[in-house]
Image 1: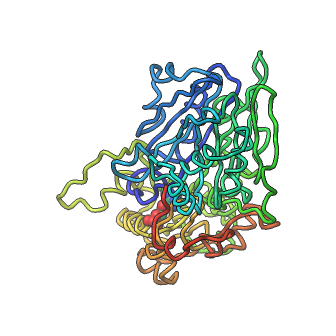
Image 2: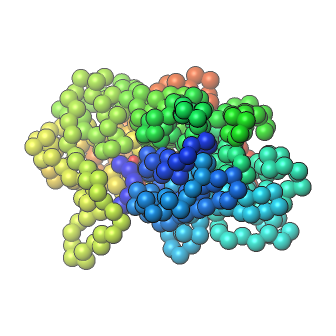
Length: 475
Ligand code: AMP
């Protein structure tokens, strides 16, 4: 399943957008954020600039509600960056909303970030000892302080110096003086695509976490920011340079293809829908079961269920209907209404399920609590058998690179066998896609992806790994 209730445990994900050279830059950023809304729904922000001043507006909520015509009118200029995120709950949430901006001796800079800087705590401690004062608890603010303190003569070289200090995952977009600068960490954990718009006045350049943002604004996807690359869109057009050599082995996040990105996006050069459908096909070959219907857990299970159905010949049915209008304002009645949270989002189509042997397909299983409720719901609707198929391997280790997973203690597959999980969830059979087949589904022939959440092998050194395992990333 996906965003909204009852998944308030997942709070770290973000989407970024940037545009250079368009007279309605803030408007485009707003549309871009709307397309990237699935990457984080708690706060959104835009900084716009005419090359001299930086104007920022950020607030809690969805982009479409925040950026009214009045607000957008107060964000003039031909360049803009935008950010949408889940944030930590409580009073500090708005303080951590992005973009962050600073006015330092290098000029006015604003930044928005997708990913997790794994040495942020150490960098922050050093910066604070040297006198920097932080306003938020976000790792992204560290980048601005590093730039502000740099002895380098230009913004570009100061940025480069700052980036070289960072470990972990970052797809960053900056408003930097009269240009937009974007950069991607040398491992390439998180995506960052480049688009171009042809205007009568010349080209405009756009950057986004996912290409679905380009479709909405009629921009052409012309490639990706490469791992270790910095791309500058400015008065001279587009210039590209490596600020550091890409890592020997890149580590693109496979979970972008499993769950996080929209299926209509091309991520890391591959269609997300294609990957998911292939995951479903391979899952049906690896874990077949005799049944009457294949039912996706919407929306995230749909493409894999289609693949499962095609490969197995078992009919695909929309046996669960999702309500897309679930906000966060519902108050659960104290009287016993069981599974209220899941029922707000999903309702079974009894006619499709009653008396049937059902294969339920979902993209992932994290704590197992949602699946348990869904299986119960499908049984109550009259299903004779329920077979759960998961289109990725068991999630056994937290992510420290920008996907918010719970602690290892809370990850059901880190602590229980598949049979124990099956019993907890209450399904007749349970099976996951193997890591080998996941690799095939994303066409990872030369191991360019990160699978750490399924293997526990992290591609970068992590300071205080034990602490990290038991705490939530600080974003
Ligand atoms: P559970 O096993 O109950 O913890 O929840 C699993 C459900 O959460 C699956 O339907 C996934 O689609 C969804 N899910 C998995 N990872 C995430 C994430 N990082 N953010 C939001 N939802 C997620």
